[in-house]
Amino acid sequence: MSAAHPVLPYVTQGHNVSELAGLRRGVLLGDLVVLPITAFSPGVGHMGAGDASDPEARVQHGFRGSWLKQGRPKMR
Image (cartoon, rainbow, N blue to C red; front, side):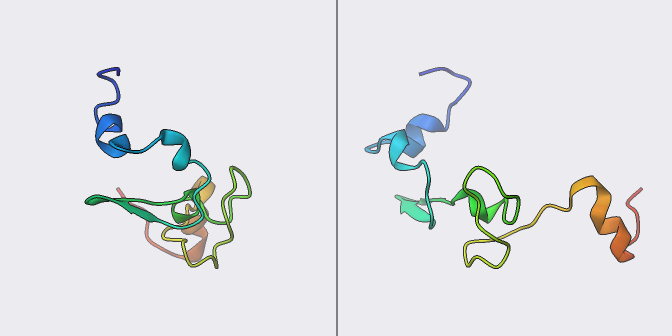
């Protein structure tokens, strides 16, 4: 195991990494919650991510400053 991935042995302890691929719902592994791609990329339309209305959606990225168009102040 490479030192570049120190969390991987902890996450996979007793599990195969392939079990985590393609998750549709979050899973609890000991004291760690592993969330599916939809949790962080809803509505993106690739890598199997679901829609923004999916119950597993947690955050939605506002690409290319799209959030600025909604009248929110710019960060300095």
